[in-house]
Every structure is written in C-alpha cells, then in structure tokens.
Picture 1 (cartoon, rainbow, N blue to C red):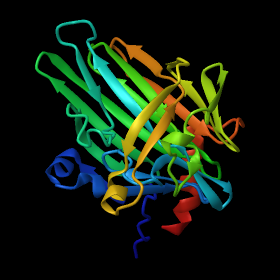
Picture 2 (picture 1 turned 60 degrees about the horizontal axis):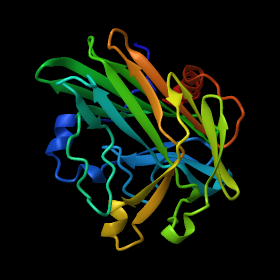
Picture 3 (picture 1 turned 180 degrees about the horizontal axis):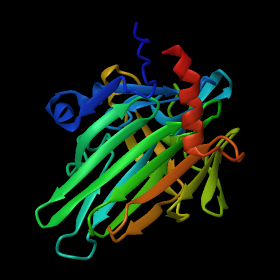
Picture 4 (picture 1 turned 180 degrees about the vertical axis):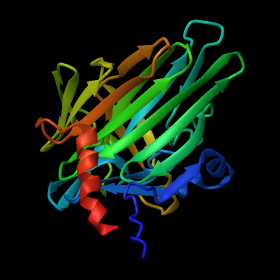
Amino acid sequence: MHAPTRTDPTDSPLTLSGERLRSDPTPLWKEWTLTNALGGYAMGSALGAPTRRYHGLLIGAERPPVERYVALTQIHETLILSEGSKHERRLCLTPLQFTTSPDRPEDLPELVEFRVGLDCRWRYRIASPDLPDVEVTKTLHLFRERNACAVEYAVGGEGVPWRLELRPLLALRGFHEVTHPSDFEGRFLTRHLAGGVVVSAGRRGVHLTFQGARPTHAPERWRDVLYAWEARRGLEHREDLFCPGAVHSAGDGSVRHTITCLASDDEAPLPPIEDDRAGQIERLTPLV
C-alpha cells in the first residue's frame, strides 16, 4: 500500500496567464478574494482594478466579523525606466478607471501571470526594443486575525535603472457606501510617522508604513474613480479617493530590490510576512 499523497495547501486554485487575460473580452470581471478569519478580506479583479465599491486591498471589520469598511482601496503604481535618457519609459501597473476616461491608462506593461492562493501575485515583464527586460512581481498578503495587509513589489532589470512611485488610495468608509464629493473636504486627517503615515476619517483609520522606500507627505485628491461593475448594475459607481502622498524607490538594476507597504487598523507590530504565511500553511495542512 502507498501512503496517500498529501496536497500542498499553497497550491494555487487559480492561475491565469497574461495571454489568456488579454484574449478575454471581459478580464475586469474575473475576481478573487482573500480572507483574514476576522470577517475582513481583500477582493478585486484579476487585472488589479477595483470594479465594485467593496473591492480593496484591505477591508477591515471594526467589530469582527461585522461593520466592514474599506481601509486601503488600491495602490497606484508608476514605473519609470531609464529616466532622463532617450529610452525613458513610464508605465502604470494597475489600470484604474475614471469616469472621465474609463479606458485609461493605455500604455500598460505586459502582465505575464496572475495567481491567487494564500496570497495574490501579479507578475509583469516589460520589454523594450533597446533595453533588457524588466520584471516586477507584486504580492498581496493578508495577515491572519489582523485587519492588516502587506503589498510587496520586487523589481529587477539586468542593469536597467528604474524608479517606482506608489500612491496609496484610501476611502475609509463602509464597504457598501461611496464618499460623495460634497463630503470629501476636511474628511481625512493625517499624522506623519518615521517611514509612514496614519490617516483617519471619523472613527476609522489606517496605519501605513513602508520598507525599502521613502514616503513624501503631499496629500492628493484623486477624482472620479469609476467602479465599472457598479455602473453596469445601475448603482452609485464613482468616488473621490484620498492619497496621503507618494512613496518613492529607485535602483540601478544591478540587484533585485523589494519594496513593502504595510497597512493596518492599529499601530501594533505585525509579524514577519513569512512567519504569518507559514502559520497559515501549518493550520491548513491537516485539512488537505
């Protein structure tokens, strides 16, 4: 007799190639979900764009498992290659949509693969005629039994200089609501930290810290973000989001560099991502 084969709980139930997504007429309708065992979750489309009011990288539960709110809607990423040279390229990794131009941005890097299991992972390869390929891997991890997430970016490019600008976009409202333009002014308060910022709106708040990158404190209002699926359903589908400032990181391409954004509903330290992931695998292993 042979011992039964044990399934690896980290095996992905869903992997989509970039080629398959590009050939699909409706890639924005393919959705994923991660959960945190508190009633909180992360949810979005395979392309990364939020298409529903309750999509986000971190939806917390104020009174677990209820009273959910959107803490971190998305991170807008701009990748600049060979800045200042004749080969300079500027690309957006996440295709946010806006009511003023629903099909923007037009110049997107090639999404090689989207994978969801314990984490979500997007892998991009940017090819240029006169430069070596540059690879970017974005990983979203949700911490178990914490209203907290980590978004990691690993960038490498065979000697191609790069700069990555990250702009966290926040709503801080109930997960079935939208913030109306008339309610936006004066709604968000910020408190700067070494390597991060705390943003609050009424009783809700999010603590943002950054590793491997330098934050700048220059608040912005991102107007007219479109939630395409809500528009199709005839529901409220536009919203202004708050950005506390940009986060900058750069490299010369000689080594692979990692940038991490941590978001949490409190300032308590988070465990290392690998430790939290290992704990989740250990918990799931007897179930498979």
